[in-house]
Image (cartoon, rainbow over all chains, first blue to last red; front, side):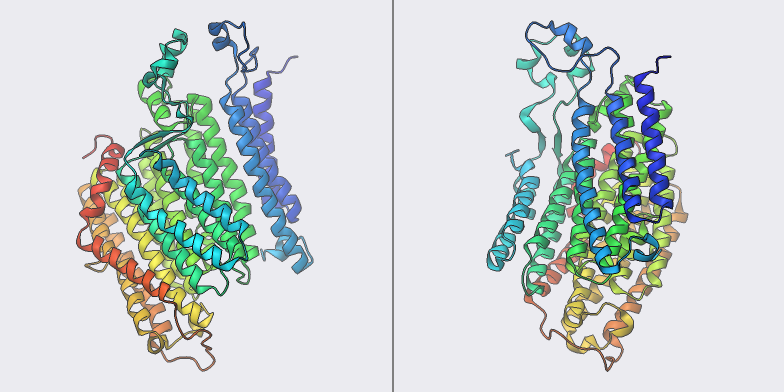
Length: 120
Length: 501
């Protein structure tokens, strides 16, 4: 059975987001929380990529010899791919800052338990 | 002169990068920070109104040189009018917002440079980066570009808190980031859904797609996108349920940092609120959602402020409550209501910064922000006491100061819109705001000085007094001549009201 690529990507993105929210809310270990948060970001990025999927489409690079009308009809929509690159960079920066803060807190408190470090 | 439009974002970014590189070179940091901070309120005054297309890619309809060679599949459809580039729109409302943001940033940066023994390049970096992000958030007509700068502003906010070295700042910053790392991807998801349905991230184009019928406005995916974007709005502005973490963030920042951070929250609230109105105002419940959230923010923010013992946290909760007033104006959906809401936003930014820097002068002298441990400061600093008192009067809406005008306009608009109950609630909450402020004012300035209260710095820097006087002048000018501000907001209000009176 062939699964529709876009639909499968959307379901995977949804699953990543749900698992991520569960980990961020219910897990007590700060590193596991951060992994959960990374899942949420990745889910959103995958969702964005899936938006740009075009069945049977071609890469959006206009090569010499291509007919313009044919290219316009067959090229995949490039915007989501451009956006997701920016989103990945933002996610990586946020993650780096968060892990840096966790390192400092671990040195001070000697624990990675959110209930101990964040007083929840 | 439209080149000045992107410069409003580029100048603070360049300054931020320089300050970071020059960290520990105290004198250079000071000179560069002051010189470039001075340009922040000047650029919007000098710039002409207009649009700026990054890369110069105007819509095809305006660019015959490119469109001539393209197939009719593109030029004969709505694609011809779409905006291919990231577009910045600079109109009269943006001019006022950016001028006020620039002024608050200039004064906060000035105070920070003179209240700290060694100016920190890293702290300056965070402040300027946040300002750049806010400038972009106010200017951009592209919802993904908005998201990018929304994230940069959140990181700058965390940076300002981390640099403060106040006990518990790391914990609060981490909590804020964890919540942000849930809310921001959900906002991104909302944007992705909009992109999926409309094929666009330019807000004007999204609106055009919905209005022209290219996209079915009743598509249920749009409802979900609206819900997710509203969730991002709640987080970014510190509306319930994020009001406690937002006020905690203010309390863990230095007062001049908090003065700037609250401006970030207000402008994020306004900018994203405007986006929500522009795209989703056709949904019958959108106004109700804005009104409901705003009412909740107003009630929770102001009543929780009454219970606080930390001055910065108290002002933080008051700031959340004041956001509610802005939201009520936007939610009413009438021209007068939206104008009043936007005017209230301008006033709130100024008054809250005024209060943060005013009480910050006491924090500078004593190193204490707990009102239970403070007292007798009237004798030490009578001028600051007078200025802080006037700031409190302004926040409570006492005439002839600026918030009196905006709150009066809000009450009149709610009566005109047929919801006088909102006006009654706003009056009652203004009284509670006044009580809350007077409680703190009495504790800090009027009661006898506790024996164990140590004065660490006898003299308040002149820069702090200058900043407070400038804020007071703005409060009085906008209080006596409100049309100076509302005149800038009228066009935006008319376009947002969409035909309502």
